[in-house]
Length: 160
Image (cartoon, rainbow, N blue to C red):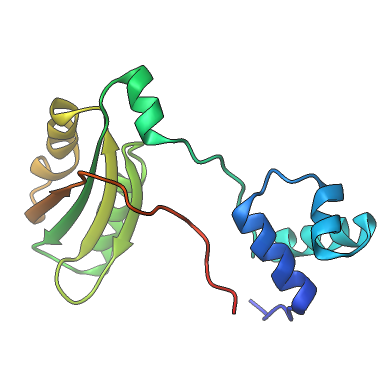
């Protein structure tokens, strides 16, 4: 994959879109002091190059919990018995397909994976552990940390 040259306007666009991807093309152009057609063309170029992977809405888990139930966030460390490529990829594929798993990172050193999972409650978390960890003979160790307060949440990558 060839490296896409980025100038100051591209970086401003990426920064603005990381903060609020719902901005209209007109509003985005005004914020970065460029014309709407130029803005639209540049954003398309950034998307086509794969720098903008997708646009999503972040839901507020505390407010959602008031409607759907309590809500439980856990950071889970997973250690596998076998770490060959096939075993690692099989585990990644299985957890990535589960909607409760919000993020999955292959890490080193220490555990093999760190997951961020969100479930309705503790029984829902226990069902997740049965589904993803207990039933997998290759999972050696599971260590979970349960969130008591979300102090910061974001997805912005530093651009400077």
